[in-house]
Image 1 (cartoon, rainbow, N blue to C red):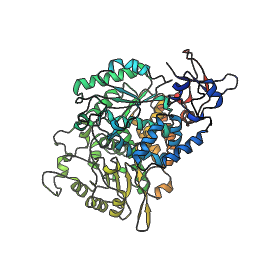
Image 2 (tube, one colour; image 1 turned 45 degrees about the vertical axis):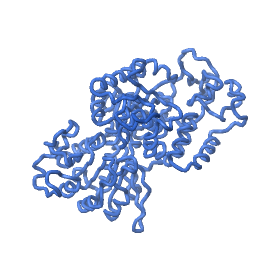
Image 3 (tube, rainbow, N blue to C red; image 1 turned 120 degrees about the horizontal axis):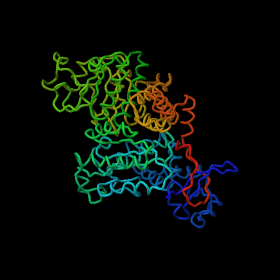
Amino acid sequence: MRTWSLRIDPLTGEEYCEVYLRGAQLLNDVLLNKGSSFTEEERNALGLQGLLKPAVSTLPMQVERTLENYAKKHTDLERYLQLSALLDRNETLFYRVLCDHLEEMLPVVYTPTVGEACLTMSHITRRYRGVTLTEQNIGQINQIFASLGRPETSLIVVTDGERILGLGDLGSDGMGIPVGKINLYVAAAGIHPACCLPVCLDVGTSCERLLDDPLYMGVRHPRLTGQAYDDFVERFVLGVQRSFPNALVQWEDFAKHTAFPLLERYRERVLSFDDDIQGTGATALAALLTARRIKGRALKDERFVIVGMGQAGVGVAQNIATVLREEGCSAEEVRARIFAIDLPGLLLEDTPGLEAPQLPYAQRRGVVGTWKLQAPGRIGLLDVVRNGGATVLIGVTAQSGLFGPEVLAALARNAERPVVMALSNPTSKSECTPLEVVRATDGKGLVATGSPFPRVEWAGRVFHASQCNNLYVFPGMGLGALVAKTPRITDGMFLAASKELARLVTAEQEASGLLLPEMQRIREVSAHVAWAVARQARDEGLGRRLGDDELMALVRRAQWDPHYYPYRSGRWTGEPTVTPAFLL
């Protein structure tokens, strides 16, 4: 049963919530609870008298009270726990606080602190969020989804917990990632929290630490694999299609061996995308397009080294290749400009065990025949930078310090303004720091990192590194796809998002070395990315056939700003209700 509906008063035109809960039940509903902000009229009508202190607070007063307590916390994990507790009590207040202080709180609600939280999630969980599906309950998926009691579910972020950030298999403790991603969808894009659902596919874990932990709350057996795993995911997808036929599914933190097959298997059947592959690639490409403008050089004039050819690395390579083809490069010319490195070293056409997504980026053996190598038999990172003439270095390895002084110095010799993108999360896993790049390049390098780093003061100058965070793309992608009502998400939509994101970087920001807009503008950035996605969907014949201005108006209308609706008591009758703007 629904717990509330949005309605419009036919006499006054007032938009209000008709709520079907009373008393303590209402206070325990995180979407509906206003805490001390319930008015006297609402307290009388909804059975709240005596359950609250007499003073009535405004939302700004509640924000002030929250920030006062937040300032008393000593560690980011303590701050994460405080904000999580607030989310579990009052979602409107939580999102008001987060929206107003997103740049400050982003490292707390998401990377790097969310990684620390996921490592101990079974020990710190206070309240369960979202839906956890297992072999035991997947047969009840229809009933599980029906029990949610929300007006609509438009967005699902789902993980199986096998590759959480750079931390590996965390099983059901990886649920912190979908929860965190939804926090960002709401704060950055304005998608209403009532529309969002975090899901964990708990198919077991192969992490011995978790299996041996008596407090671990997930399924205690090794991971499902093969056909059993595929069948489980298929049952999940079918359940989504039955219960939420118009919902967008974001695949999140799946391991490489499942991420690529799932993306290909379902991208035509379900409105879906993989943020680790497509979101990372699109955000990195936007930074490179800005660098292209700063340097005044086409991307085909650069030589790219990508270290780590999992989901993120392949996604970055695919996006670079798309623009290289736009600039007139053939498939072989694309291959000659992208050097892909993984555990065996430089990937070559005859490297054993190459996977299908890696094949287009494996170098011909003849290309490296004359290279001078540090050690025969393996072509390492330094060999590639020196012999390949690298001008752009991209890391997605979760190997701290991989881009050492010798590698950065070699890169600096190849280009006047080299580009270094150390994209691994959390901060402790970053391949290098901005300071190390500044020192190695005499301040001429352009830097982007996966996690936030403070500005660098060196030789009397101040340098900024852009945070190449998928937050710049995935919220706008989701919002744009839902507003456009596209049945699927295409590569063209991600390319449109990248170009729009790069366009938003101002000349002043470029002069300071920034490759992406400042995080303070993320709501505006997300609106423009969503607009670009909706336009591209329309132009591909997949979305609403509306003009540019009409699409932007829909995007703006769909962006929810955290505030309290007036409440009136009601009884759920199943009658049609107003379609809220945020459900369009």
